[in-house]
Length: 306
Ligand SMILES: [Zn+2]
Image (cartoon, rainbow, N blue to C red; front, side, top):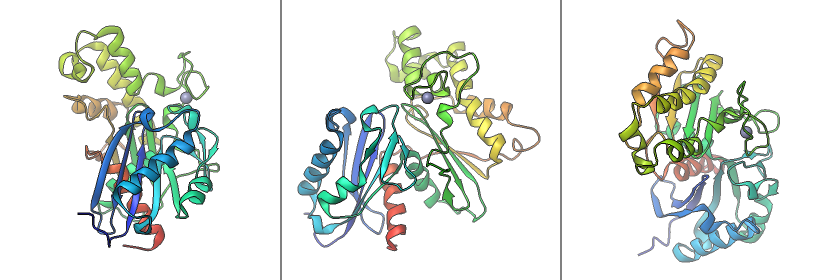
């Protein structure tokens, strides 16, 4: 039976590979969860129309439109400062340079919020913890790309254009590979899920991808990959001296991912004695619902519902 009387925020977590969607009530309970491949949902020639079609079908299948308070969508993208448009999406190029909010709001006549996906993922973790008003929290999410979020002064750092915290796109000296963002030598080219996929294809294709850490965790090429993750993480730690570092994403959740080795390398690159001493590193909960629940938490707060 559908809970016809309840009101929900629909959360949509759009990563480089999967779309996750669910309806969240104000008590934080999640209903009607679904997970799809991105390209089964998004038509690259008509990305917004296909997203509207997807949302409409989801609502018709599970709810009445009157029950939907708002829709919140996290994208692996630079989101405009006014939170209406997507500026750039290296891992889902068809969504770059689109005003998404006005068109979806016009179709459904309900509020639509968009945000960088990692901000919603980190919001989910922050909501579970006792984070002080002055605390700095850094989020590093290694999925298809290298996602980053900086929480400071009780909000996510946006910068002048909404383009802050693009750690995956800092340049690396001597790296000549062209990134999907258009620049040369971005860190994401060798510190991300897609870099691990390339590594697997080149050296470890005798085992299934998901077993690459389980079977080859001690290989020097895997160790170099772990160090490649640790360098940008430690770099940002040295800039912000954070109260909490949150690490997550699909790569970190893989079978036998060497967490201790990642922590060791991060520690070794951090400035001594601080921020290295007493550095607090935690791992994001490995759940498909994090981006959806994080979106709902942020939107219920905006709507004044809690
Ligand atoms: Zn780049």
